[in-house]
Length: 347
Length: 119
Image 1 (tube, rainbow over the protein chains, first blue to last red):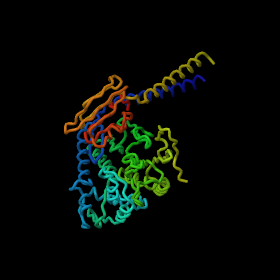
Image 2: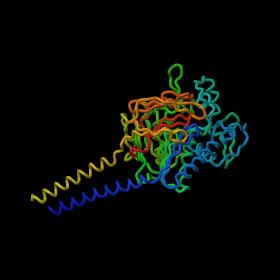
Image 3: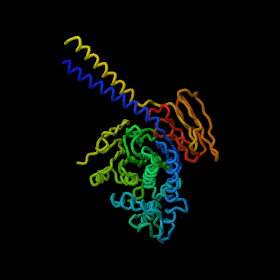
Image 4: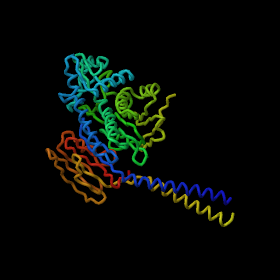
């Protein structure tokens, strides 16, 4: 009996010692230098944090890359690839590798989601005023006319050469920030950083873990109270990207609320039961494209896609105030809202 | 049960309870009361909200424009600004470490600071 007790006390003391050691390690890791940088680009607030001796240089390189991408992808900058494509009058345009990669991904995701993601919605978004800030509800006839030129399959791309029929315009806003996140991670790694986290207008992407080896804690906003957090998930080396109806919207004179994620099927704000879609995965570009597409596709569309491609995780919020998340993040998901949360059943 | 066994059990319970308490205290993030007001990557104010008196003050943006910051009952917010969209005002009081108050046109950010943030 005494022997058993002694063994037990040894084990428990061991646990105490181990936890004492990990506390100590954490304390020394906190001393690892970290630097942060704010970047105001792509019409968004971006914040980057990197750990390690080379952090300052890595942040400067990442900032340069962001500004380069902004120049290539901007809809309003007259020297951007997108401007050139949208004003090409049907002629072929040479674009950067970045632009080509994003366009190819947009076409792939359009195909994968039955057209729920369509980069040729640009003229419709403009008509609603979401790109200019001059919001209005378009009349039916105008919408119908504009929708005739909405079809991403009309975008031709061969290597870095892009061509569009006249009257078709593209906007890569649904994918640009995701791609930017990936490129920041690459730039950081190239500069010797192994621990970094960035927030690009609420989209979070992490390189590695925190310096102490623990996961990053990422908060996802409550779409019904966007100044508060809804849940926390713990991640390492992942992107967490949300599309929500609270991000950009306006209230019309009749009191109706219209948001910026449009359904390519009818040109109206997508209203298929979801108010927020968060996609968690390895690739920011994929996650960004999917968050928009699945917002349009709704719960059933999201389930369908999960069945064919289970390589990412989701947190969905329905308009009746319920949270649905995938089994894959069950262990690292903490609901801190008053909404009920349940695992998405794929059976 | 001998006295030795009882003592041992007692010691084990005390050690284990101490370990549990230590683990809980050690892992719980404390709520920060420190905030930074940052203009274009320069920290212009570093404030402990728990010590600050209620007040409002104006922050000018060198390229033109201003924001009016309010500290009230240990909370901070932007209550007025001459920017076009007023997103900074709509954000309301600073509550979350992951959601800073941001005024894009004036490159102004108010966020909880690392010091005492517990993360």
